Image (cartoon, rainbow, N blue to C red):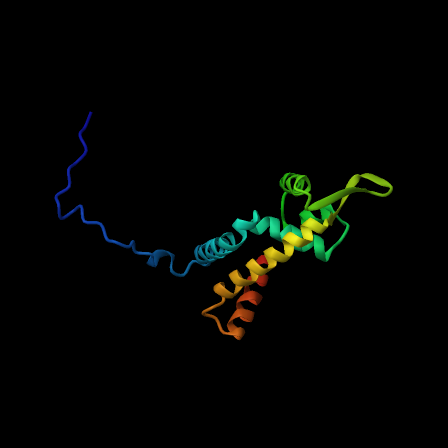
Length: 157
């Protein structure tokens, strides 16, 4: 078996930071880094509340859309129905939401926040608002609006 080649001390020096220039103009790369920064900021505020960005999104949607069908919620959030079912089961077990069968259609579940869900949502909204402020700190209001518009166009493509 061949032995690995030994490098001289000079050849082993590795730069402190890698050259990112091959990725500098890659939209997907910067979107991923921005998403990671967003999730990190959200987790710092939401984690102590037992919330994640996904759980907060579901609670926000249920407040805005009481009695929404589970299938419609999955579609709106672009979540696989099976993944949403797991998330909803946990929220229901924690007493944060209530699932009821749709009248006349036993296969369809309608979803609604409980009072405990609303209380947790208020706390989550405060943490989320702080994370939003932190993320937008270096942006002017016009830049923030332009970024949101661009992200919406990308997401709708």
